[in-house]
Length: 111
Image (tube, rainbow, N blue to C red; front, side, top):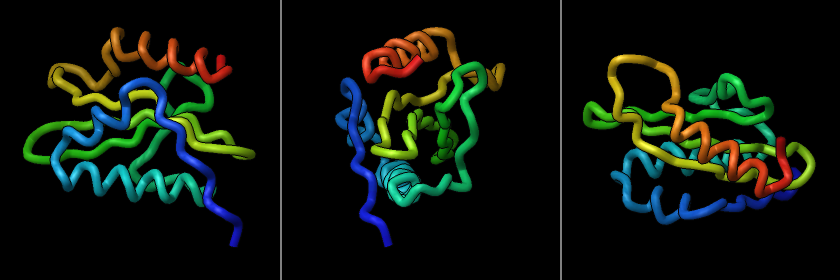
């Protein structure tokens, strides 16, 4: 088996994730481990409008949580953003979160 890919946390993502409930942290930890193995977690999907970026979702206690990652097949997994989805009116990712994701993707040399 190949060595797992390293995980790089962009911005305050690691601290933000640590503030969340344990079941959410466990779900995202498992998702990151799966990505480190070069596979896609079942709870992930491509983030609409940003090529090469995945959104992993978790629900807990009536709240929706999101982990946004850029898995680079050859070298690493980059955690770009984590946030709690507040809007229950729509399914789209809020514009302010998309701006954060795009900025952090540029920071790591993405599009």
